[in-house]
Structures are given as C-alpha cells and as structure tokens.
Image (tube, rainbow, N blue to C red):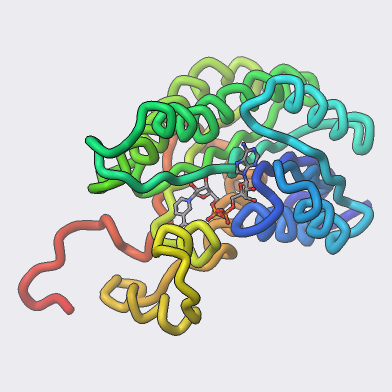
Length: 260
Ligand SMILES: NC(=O)c1ccc[n+]([C@@H]2O[C@H](COP(=O)([O-])OP(=O)(O)OC[C@H]3O[C@@H](n4cnc5c(N)ncnc54)[C@H](O)[C@@H]3O)[C@@H](O)[C@H]2O)c1
C-alpha cells in the first residue's frame, strides 16, 4: 500500500510532457498517486512517464478531441482501476494585440484552453462519481483575473476557464466532484520563455525580472504543482468552486509610495 498525501488516488494530468504538467505528475506520484500523463508530444510525455516508473502511464491526449479523452479515461481504468483527479493543465498562448489577432488564432486558443477542459470534465466526472467523487483542477492564469494588453485570446480563455470552474463545481457537487481553479503568475517554463520571444535566459535573469514582486522571484513549476497537490488531496475536501492565485503577489494591488 502506497503512502503519501495522494495514497490510493489515480490522476490524469494534461500537458504533462514538460513544464508544470510534468512537475505536477512527478509530485503526485511522489505523494503516492498513480498518474496518467497526456500530451500531444508523444516522445516527451513517454519520457516523463518512464522517469516516474510503474505508477505512471503515458497516453496521446489532444485535449480538443473527445475520442482522445475517452481513451485516456479508459487507460486510467484499465491500468489502475479508478479515477479521482484531473488536472486540466494543457494550454497554449498567442500574443497579438486585439486588432492583429486573427479569428482563427483566437478560436485555436479557446479550443485548447477552454473547450479542452470542458471536454475533459465531461469525460471524467461520471467515472469519478462511480469512484465516490473526485477533484478537478483547472490551471487558469492571473490572466483569468485581470486583463493583459496583447493577449486577447489567452485572457478570454483563462477568464472563461474560471467561469467554467464555478458552474461545473455547482453542477458536479451531486457526484462528489470538486472543481477549483489555480491562477499562476509568471512561471519559469518554456511557455514563459516563448512569450518572451524565445530568447535563452538563465533562471537568475528571469528571477531578476520578477524582483519587484512581494515574493521577489519568478514562479517555479513546483509552486503550482504543490497547489494542485493540495487541491487534489482530501486536505481540501471542503473547497470547491473557488480560485487560488499563485503569483508571488503580482496582482495583489498597485505598489505605492513606501513600496519597493
Ligand atoms: N508559464 C507561465 O508563466 C504560466 C502562467 C500562468 C498560467 N500558465 C498555464 O499553465 C499551464 C501549463 O503551462 P506551462 O507553462 O507548463 O506550458 P508549457 O508550454 O511548458 O507546457 C504546456 C504543455 O501542454 C501541451 N499541449 C499543448 N496543446 C495541447 C493539446 N491540445 N492537448 C494536450 N496537450 C497540449 C504542450 O505540448 C506542452 O507539453 C497552461 O495552461 C498555461 O496557460 C502558465
């Protein structure tokens, strides 16, 4: 019998080939969970799963495809016999000011970041209900709390995901399924570096860019994984339909006189 804060639980993590998805899958497994890792990057996700070992399985999961979701749920049940947790982590960004943002790019971002978690929720909730309940964790962003110039599609998708979280929490309570959203600020992953123009930057430099924050550094994937761990575990049993901002204080307010 495994031990840890997620002992006995089975989780699906999307976008698990790298970044915070990979870190979340590793932390969940270290805390006793068995994990199905999904991504569109086959090699990457297999490599992360292999690094975890026998308590992990890799599947090709494009979150925009209903048949992929069905296969992922089947993989969890076939390998581990139950399903308790879903982390809707997969996401893409597209930078373009509103008038330069092409409708097809806008739709593509919504399809992955918002329709994907909706499809995932529909696929897992009945199965979780049969296991006695579960926890769905939607990785939104601080751009689900405040707007950001030049990111219309991403901001709309992340606000949408926050709204979807509230309604699904209300609809799925009857199944014993809790649903919450996490709102990271800047986190040191490929996505952040690509948004910065793909320039090679050391963590020290990225930290320096974030030195004005109350917590004066960039976020680490582990900061987000640890929050997902809490929401996945029974420690958060009375928490549903809410949001946790994990941003080092980025959107706490407007720094004023006397501040740094
Ligand atoms: N890095 C940040 O600063 C930051 C801040 C706030 C929120 N977020 C959110 O956190 C989540 C994880 O971001 P990250 O920084 O680890 O990004 P990342 O780009 O490092 O990883 C994202 C993963 O999602 C996968 N993916 C993309 N499209 C997919 C699809 N259709 N189906 C399945 N997988 C798909 C990619 O292959 C990749 O492995 C995203 O939802 C992102 O929007 C990131």
